[in-house]
Length: 174
Image 1 (tube, rainbow, N blue to C red):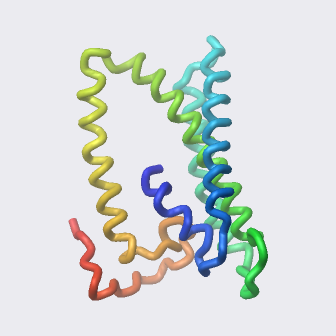
Image 2: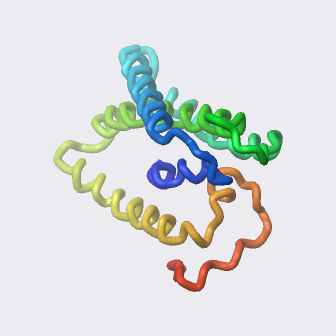
């Protein structure tokens, strides 16, 4: 999710098409809010455990990020600059909105699970221990974004060896 925040723009415009960033971002926020609202309704049901529906949420979010891969294989991109969103961009935007809705469900639901499983007196310490490697991972991915083409990160188009990195960019290696 954290790398998605930085990489959705180049994923939606691989050929430098003009995309309405304000509209797309507002749509993402709406999808996330709808996901949070759906999570509140799901958590209100006493018969439904959070752990059960979160398995479905993880599967749906994985499937929604497969949509750009299938789009790049099945839909040939147009060489003509279109006004508005292209068909490929619209399909990818739909997949990304479903992913954002899953993030909304996840955010609300994980708070309930934390309160159930992590003792309150140790919760902040435990959660901060998990944030350190997460933030380190995000920094490494963003530092190496030029070494790994965006098509591999979201679309999986280029499965051939990676392009040579620019001489100016010295990516971190682990």
